[in-house]
Image 1 (cartoon, rainbow, N blue to C red):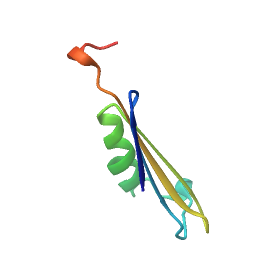
Image 2 (image 1 turned 60 degrees about the horizontal axis):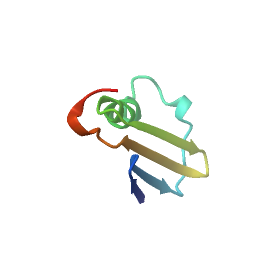
Image 3 (image 1 turned 180 degrees about the vertical axis):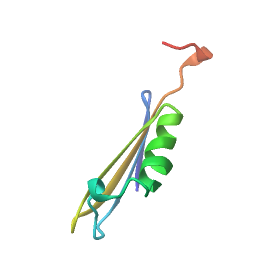
Length: 74
């Protein structure tokens, strides 16, 4: 796990060297990655990417932009 914080926001990288998996082959009813990771990050204005390959492990990247002062959009 590695984290970076700068003026643009925060990025957290989580990587393993396990068996990996084919994300496209995960059935729609298995919502863990889609809801718990990607969906939750999107709900707070962030982004999550999951890259995995069979036999090569998995990397999850979570990015959250810095909050704007004053809370005004745009």
